[in-house]
Length: 392
Ligand code: SF4
Ligand code: SF4
Image (cartoon, rainbow, N blue to C red; front, side):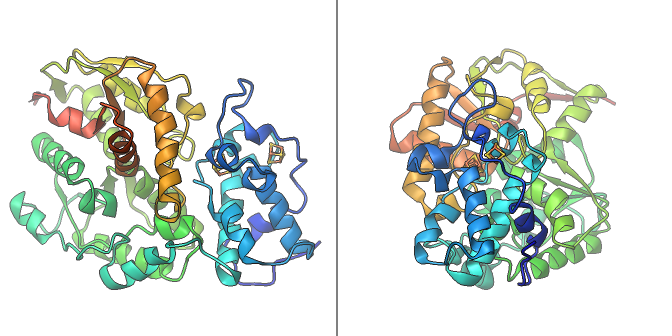
């Protein structure tokens, strides 16, 4: 057995790649229905761009059959880590394919990587604590504006994309939390580290995770709530995976909406008379198994007609933004979203929604670039437009 001799967090996943894949190619298409499912393989059309090829790449590198070279950068990094391959593969290692790809990236960063521009995710964080390179917001202004306390039961972890690119989603979420009266506050956040983890650049990951945990602890909060699918996955799965466990309960804002509706603590009183289709974010759907919860909420919005795209739930076509693709391969990222919008068009919907600011950004960019006349909205932004009756 060959072992990985470097200090690699994902070492066990690399070693898994040595013996488990049988090259059956089931990972290339939606399981049983044979729909296009892998944005990377479908675009580049070489074996090395599918999950099976990436596993062969790991094997080749570990066994010494393949030498490191810059030619490996695209096959390793041009993947959205959407997890569609994991969903289709029927072998015992299926659940770990994305972990294998991320571990391969971790190793690649030490030899040849990352892909072009992805290093900016780290350098911008070094200067500004967020991967967008925007002046760091301490969130003190928001705390003042919404009259938030220093200590609270809940902590809203806004996330960099909502705070610096999708402020309407952030503000809709803040208004909802105020409206329903939960006791919450904010911290001066550092990036949740998702972009660095996805691109194998781990230099600041532990420091940032520890920083965020310490800041949350200062508020006394026992519950962390986020409106970002990427932050949600990272806070629940990756803090633990990277050896920085915490004991906060973590919620997506949708889970709070559902709880309040189920317990009949809120009532949605006005109508939203539009036909809407829902794009499952990979980090909420395939990565965390949340498919029905948002649909349940859409169905409770008076007047809203929910129509499904052909590829939905675990078969959803990725929006194209994840895995460092948005910064490393920006044009291709938008083309992946274009395919999603074409599919959405076939439903007759006028609005495409999601539950992730990163999906929203990329779908909006594609809609603008290719002149789709879609309104792109997050579910929280739809809820923000409704009259909400708070019950005692
Ligand atoms: S990753 Fe899974 S589905 Fe893909 S070739 Fe290997 S065993 Fe088959
Ligand atoms: S994670 Fe998505 S893009 Fe990457 S190999 Fe799997 S299906 Fe393809």
